Length: 137
Length: 138
Image 1 (cartoon, rainbow over the protein chains, first blue to last red):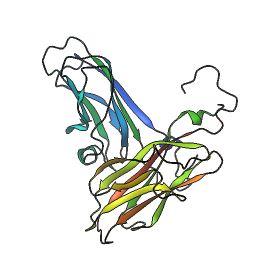
Image 2 (cartoon, helix red, strand yellow):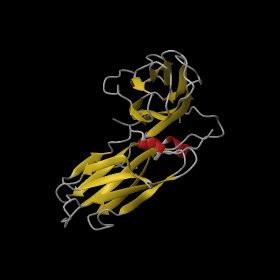
Image 3 (cartoon, rainbow over the protein chains, first blue to last red):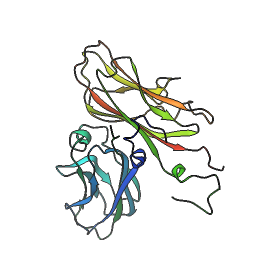
């Protein structure tokens, strides 16, 4: 197990890619209602992820992925009108760190579906967040 | 542990996870143009992702960039990643790197360069994601 950290302070679980995921549908929790995907521990860094659309939502419908207080910190207006894996598109931007990262506090990840035309009768997607934890020092 | 069929005898459970190296650098530690050792990749490791998480922007009066690579090639995995704005800057050279080795370890390094050497802020975590290929029956 390759490490750059001091011996004795290592944790094996800190050296793998972690993930949290949760399903969201067109009516659970419903349009414009934030769904809690999970909680990142302090120091967790989101490195990838996205929304895997398994059943199409309505035309022009979107999902934001972020944290409490910054609903689109990781991904904004991800297209869910077609099936497929829609990668998080905002990880390189400032809110992904200023709101989505903390050395000392956990972050609650949320996903918010917007039924743009207010006519959705179908739609299911898994929100997936890949992250690494901070080394113990 | 996602598997299809019986695992090979030589397989190891740890080979079926994405592993990571992560280490923090700042504008002054180790300092401009000085390579920071991030960690060591085992023989056969394949780098599959990663990047530089800029937590506090670097503020040299000139350019601020970070290279990520190895002791053999300092920008093997990422070249001139912009450190002047916070955010996760993805490694941009993985599609063309030639640093893989089946037989020897690779020491991963990161090098910050402040053009004028006068930065007073800057914090970043270097993150390397990799898988083991060694000991997996092909």
